[in-house]
Amino acid sequence: MFFTRWITNFVAPAFAFLAGTSAYLLGQRMGDRRALSRYLVTRGLILVLLELTVIRVAWTFNFDFGHYLLAGVIWMLGWCMVLLAALVWLPTVAIGAFGVAIIALHNLMDFVPLNEDQLAQSSLAWLWQILYYGGPIQLGHNGPTLMVLYSIVPWIGVMAAGYAFGAVITLEPSRRDRICVTIGASAIVLFLLLRTIDVYGDPRHWHVTAPTPMPAAFRFINTTKYPASLQFLLMTLGPTILLLPLADRARRKVGEFWATFGRVPMFYYLIHIPAIHFAAVIVSLAREGRADPWLFANHPMMNPPPPEGYTWKLSLLYAVFIVVVALLYFPCRWYARRKATNPAPWMRYI
Image (cartoon, rainbow, N blue to C red; front, side):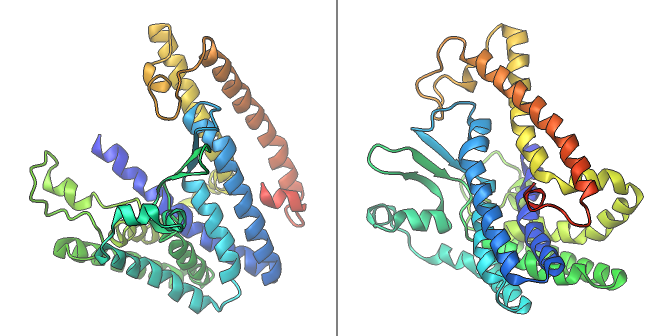
């Protein structure tokens, strides 16, 4: 049970880091910083819009926008792209230094005494939550609650570091692989060192004094994700970068498979959440003749519970969504192959 959750920790850091790398490679192909900056702003705002609409419905399984909005990983990636659009005007070395500094130093905030009452009364409390602390933000007196799961810091540092890492990716393969192994192994060693000392890099100290049923080995690797601590990022990005040369060799062996799944990650992200939820509803209906109560009733994301027939209607909508998106994928991929040398502008965003 623990490891089914722990293994998912590697996803968001890889998304943010390699999104920065992709931006660097795209900029090299474009040869125009202004065009790259404009693309990042447009793409970032599209991601934020998707998070607050389509993805929010997919996660919460309801249309109650008046009470609850979700600011998850796609929200974070979108705003980080918007910020990266400004950073790309700096030299690559400066962008990399900025990213590493944010990753390494942001946990100094752990030593700043935080008075939650004072923070709540501050007129800039919402900005601090978006930038670092996360948590619920009330939009207006009677507006919905925006639940910030992923704050901007330190993720903008991860994306900026990934952008500078793009310069490594373009190196000669053997040299690139050596650098990947060096960076990845160094990050892992630093994580082990900081975690053993247990003084800096994560607000959750694994040398706990209070009784806990969690084994010491689990506590050791159970680092803080919200906001992502230095130790969390070292633990996840270290192995990710270390294994990149191996992934490249696997890509060469099954190139078409990786090309298909790797070029359209947003397609699979959008479809996997409703697909899982739709499957859960169908299994629940088959076993008990009704949806499990946790899907709707007494749930903070859905209050009051849905009306009669709501489960079937939304399940049908999900099924239609999955089929339509799946059918659209094939003509889009066919068109992208035909326009591979000179893609249409709208294809770049897909």
